[in-house]
Image 1 (cartoon, rainbow, N blue to C red):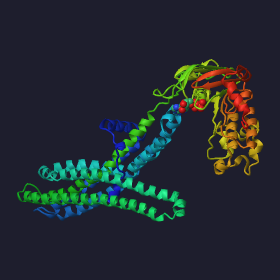
Image 2 (cartoon, rainbow, N blue to C red):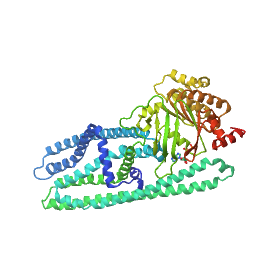
Image 3 (cartoon, protein in one colour):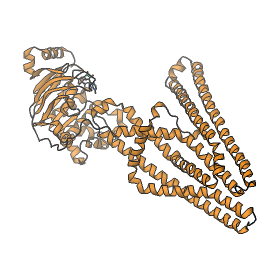
Length: 599
Ligand code: ADP
């Protein structure tokens, strides 16, 4: 059905202005440079195809004029004409095949490279970006936007380009062939263009409704399925049926309406085309009688008319798709233009091995329009010592930890390691020296071995084993049926929270950083694993500078120093004993914790 060819409907989100469209086009041409040769070849083949398509009517005209009518008609012209016609048709067939392959190959290569570019770019961006952007929107860039382009490449691009080329060149050919007939023919072009535009607009609106109704039917289905137990428990099938039936009916109505629009459009264009033919026959016929033109020329004209009307139809049907693809490219280019917030400075230097980690007069806000989360924080963590950050939820502990690892840059003040501002350090040396162990380590598809190896891609199996041994977890994982070759995702939920923690810690051990930033798990682990995790943390901390966000005061108790963070500032700083003796906020916290039945 022609309807399906119109592709997706266009919402406001899919529209871009003229200037933006121009910019998108320029940039796309720029990005197409690597495929220059393929593109040139495709254009050459396209020209051959169009020329051979247009040669047909011309040959017919010559055959009629010199082979069939007039005083000097010759059978030879008919024979040669037939051979020429067949030859041209064969060339056209070959060119068509070649152009489909060539245009699609260039299009697909472009998309393949665009996908990897966007993917790499997203990965290169820093935390502030991921705070601003929802994952869903990023995924949409890679799915619906790329899909729109994919659809254009597969179904529309070639037709669009050939149609445009055909339309403009047929106009020229007709004008040259007989200016007078050309002008007469032009009379039918405006109605076709106008009704095509109306069709585009109406069918777009209708398709949006269809899309919306499909969504509603699906959501009714989804809800009924999700709630099937409740529905059956209370015998409410009837109501569910009614709800689904109503939406299903609405979807039917929308589809019928959409078809009605197509049903109106296509006969209109057909009619215009017939009317044009009639006009050419009448006017052309009169001209032939008046010896102003020849029968063959009129014949050519009638044949050319088809080549003129078809492209208008094709282009109007593809217009939405083209528009949507333009918008998709615009959004993708916008994403590619986002610069990383945390970037490496030119002439950045490697962080030294070892040194104190110093936070100096740091203030921080996540976004300029948000309140500061940290204000004038100064704290030093001497080389090789352990600092525990404690304080209520939302106080700013994680934020402080993230600044220490340069996931963000401070708004005021600076964070230095071994005297070097983190902003002046190479990112590679920073990630090597400072490693963050999050509360919940993410597990990727693959074996345990591979999951630990993520911390150091070049590490051998033995290195990984060594890391596990360091934190005392080797035996535990070896005891699994497949040992270190256990597929963690398949075991997925069966890997306990504690075991996932151990994987996280093993990654850090493998990375072997100088500074370790640990976010202690808040959730209670099962007692068996808890002890293992404690041992692992102890082993991992050994000989390193450690900052730990402590949720258990036992962790704070074992640290060299404790900083109490509250409302974006460090309100107390000292050793556990000092702070307890002082009788301030920490002492109060500790008293509550120590007195509590569980800790
Ligand atoms: P803590 O670790 O002490 O619980 P956080 O550092 O996580 O505290 O949070 C401190 C404050 O910063 C909170 O008010 C929190 O809502 C806010 N915050 C944390 N992360 C973000 C973020 N990515 N974007 C905006 N605000 C954030």
